[in-house]
Image 1: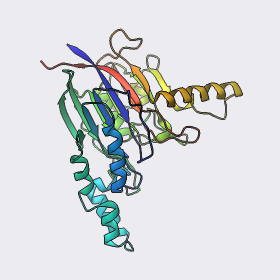
Image 2 (image 1 turned 30 degrees about the vertical axis):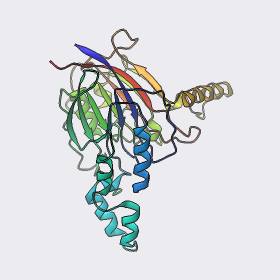
Image 3 (image 1 turned 90 degrees about the vertical axis):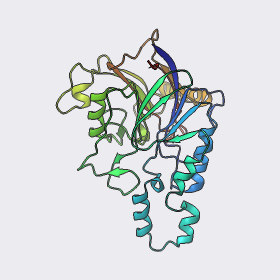
Image 4 (image 1 turned 90 degrees about the horizontal axis):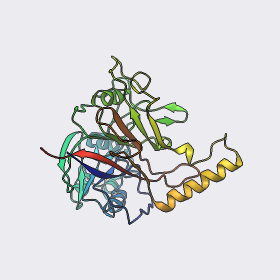
Length: 316
């Protein structure tokens, strides 16, 4: 047995002034990290208030690299480096060690996910298994980052329904300044686990969604070249469809502007992959990838959040 389930997905709000459509309803709301720009307490409060305004009985949040005060070793390292900062100023703006986490944990209706697997039974009767990880490859010294040279282990079990990470996998919705910026270790783990949904942000230029069809066998070194069947996959939406590129004609630019305005007015981009839909998602055959980075680039101040409908199993 399965039940249709709606997910509201947003990421990289960076404490921006975002006004969400108040008519949005979902079974699960997900924030994929970067609640803040500078990891200040007032920024956390702003993004948490944004999430509290979403009509969803379960609201899940992970951290991003900008949210470094949630990563205590990274926070302590930054304080040690900033010798000129007065301790009182740090305390006032960023809080003490652990204070940002306590703020989230004490916010009604919001569940912060540490790295690992989490289990839920939803109000609609569905069973939901989530794997979460905030870690992204970089040596910049921000929160939840690891060296690309050493990699990171993502322990995604084969019964996981939804994967929530801050960053993208290598090869899917991860173009940044014309290069792939996603994590190969994450892609390899996803290719083996094949969850129903993987949502993330971090790479703002990668906003969009793609229904990926997996090839039958897993290669020894999984990659988007060897494990994705692009002939059977479907791009739901991508940023270049709604923002100008240097290749656009005047008519194309006008059509993109109209599309972007409609999306902004609506307040979200939706897609559904249940039985009977045009592109139904088949368990272990497909994964829906969603980059929900909200902070816009030139030409689109707000990249719309996503409202995704999928089928989840029921207990028993």
